[in-house]
Length: 104
Image (cartoon, rainbow, N blue to C red; front, side):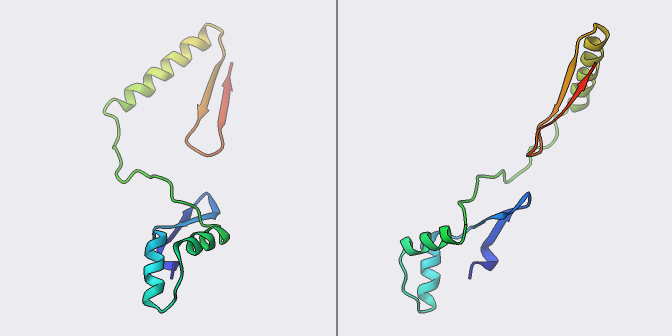
């Protein structure tokens, strides 16, 4: 019954959730002739390692109009620091793992 209403985390296949609420699952099971409580449904979801879905953005915000200018500014600042003999650390924080580069 949950197969069509299950989603998961593409970065971790063991994390999955259903968009159905326990009361909706109970209602569907009642239609099929099964008598079960919401507490049992919650217990079974937990037993089968379903988690609550995380809040997600529904719409993208689009790019910033000065995105290129921001990166050009960062590039100039980086070069100024390097020319002055200072170290620069570049961090990529978009992924689960934190990646860094050290420039001298």
